[in-house]
Amino acid sequence: MWKKIGLIIKPQDYDLKWWKSYGMDPSPIQLKGSIFRVFFCGRNNDNQSLIGYFDIDLNNPKKILKISKTPVLTLGKLGAFDDNGVTASCPIRINKNRIYLYYIGWKPKSTTRYSLMTGLAISNNNGETFERYSMAPILKLTNREPYSILTAPFVLRESKNKWLMWYVSCEEWVNENYPKYNIKIAHSRDGLNWKQNGTVCIKLKKNERAIARPCVIKEKKIYKMWYCFEKGVGNYRMGYAESKDGTKWKRRDNELKFPLGKKGEFDDQMQEYPYVINHKDKKFMFYNGNSYGKDGIGLAFYKED
Image (tube, rainbow, N blue to C red; front, side, top):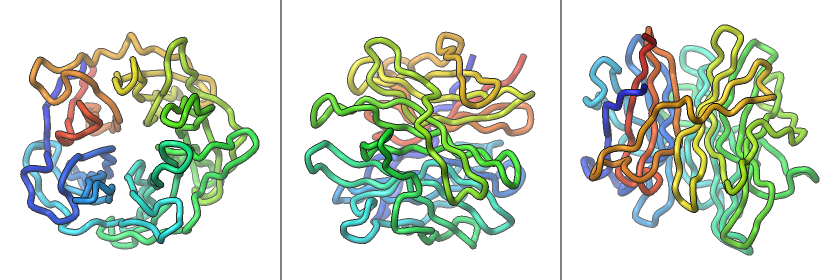
């Protein structure tokens, strides 16, 4: 069973112009040893999502070592896919100082509630600042995937020329506020140019509306995925699946022992947006709780018996 450390950072503890509320989609990357930089999405006074980071030592995770005073990635240009918000999703280290950050770009409602598309930003100073690789999304709309929800990417670089991406993809809009989406896979040889064929990896079960934010680790030739799935509108729980090839997955949600928090805790109603890492002999899960991360970012760990 996973053991919870609890909230490790919350917006009310800081007086930052760019971060006034929420702390969504924690996305860690190792700096050195047990020191990790965690990119996340905070909201400003206009309720727009911006990307910043904090640094922690996993040996003492409730002590924040550093926090970005300004966002590392801000809004895109007016009319672009990310002109109303950006959210961190998956950082990949390329070398000592170069990081690819796959992120989510937000646009507000037109005929449907929102547009959520995948972008890529690149840092050459170890995540202190980022520049967009492209002003356009790196996943494309196709006849198989015509809806502007191609989002929440998780990227695994298996070798120099083999990159895999699992992402959230909309299957249909039931009405203007109600999209249905699952998890699909894309392939790349360089992490920049991606091929999509619409292959579904994690399917919706009966009466499910959404499966969100995949995170994958490969261990002993088995791909292991954590994600969240919706039990009733706006009520997420953690899920888990395994695969031998990265494409065909078996859901094992019941095997993931991750109970809701006790009454009054930040995750006593819902849990979502997991990001799992291996460090030494433990797994650590960064995640959000009630109201999509309104209270901040939580952390849990799992140690094999």
